Image (tube, rainbow, N blue to C red; front, side):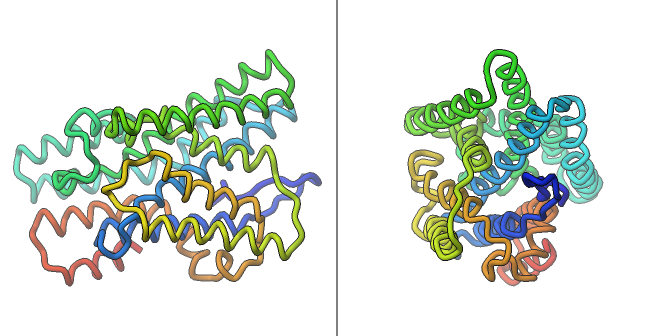
Length: 325
C-alpha cells in the first residue's frame, strides 16, 4: 500500500510496518465481529482504528505538501480515487451481476440504490436515513452496508485538505497544527454529546467521526521521541486498549461516544511508538493481512450477508472468513 510510505527528515522513503500491522489488527477485529459478534463483541471498533490510520497518513501527505509549497488538491483527490474507487466499483459490479440472478426484484432494486450511493460516497447518509441502527437485524439484508465508513472517509478527504489549504493562507504552519489540535478536542466533545442525543446519526456521519481521523493527524503533527524500552511500553499499552475495547465493549454501548477514545487512543499510541521491528505488528502474517486489508474489508461483508440471506448453517462462517482473505 503506497499510503504506508512516509518521508523522514532526510527525504528518504520509510515503510511503516507498524501501521500496516495495525491495519491487520483492525480488519481482523471487524471481520470476526461481523461473522460472529459473540467472538469479539466490540470488534466494530476496528473501523475506528482505520479512521485513525487514515487521518495520520492524510495529514502527513497534506502537511508535507504545504510545507514544501507543492501541495495539489487535485492530485490529492486523484490519488485517493485511484486507491479507493476501482476495487469498490468491482465489488459493486460483481454484486449487481450476482443479484440479477439470485435476488428478488425488490431486493435487487434496493441493491442498485445502495451501489449507487456507495460509488457516490453518500452511503452513510442513505443508511442513516433508512433505518438508523447499524446493529439492527435488518443490517444483514444490506449487501453494501459496510461502505458507510468509506463514504465518511471520502467526505473527510474532500473537506480536510480544503480547510488546511485555506488555513495556510491565514496563519503559520505552527498555528495550523495548534488549530488542528483544538479542533480535535472540540470534535471529540461534540461526538460525546451527539452520541446520546442522536446515536444513529453519530454512528454514520462525518461530524462525529472527524475527531478520530484528526487524532491520527495529531500523531503526525506532534510525534513523541522515546527510548526503545518506552516505545515498547507505549506499543503494548496501545494494543491493550484496542484489544480490550474489542472484548469489553459491545453493540449495547452508545457508539462512538466517550468509549471510542479507547481504540482511538490505542491506535494513536501504537503509531507514536514507531516500532518498525515489532514482533507484534511486523510479523509476516499481520504484514500480509495489512497489505490485503482493504480488499478483505470490501469483500467480507457481502459474504456475511449471503450466509444470512440464504439461511446457510454456521459452517459457512469459517468458509466465509477464509474466502474473505
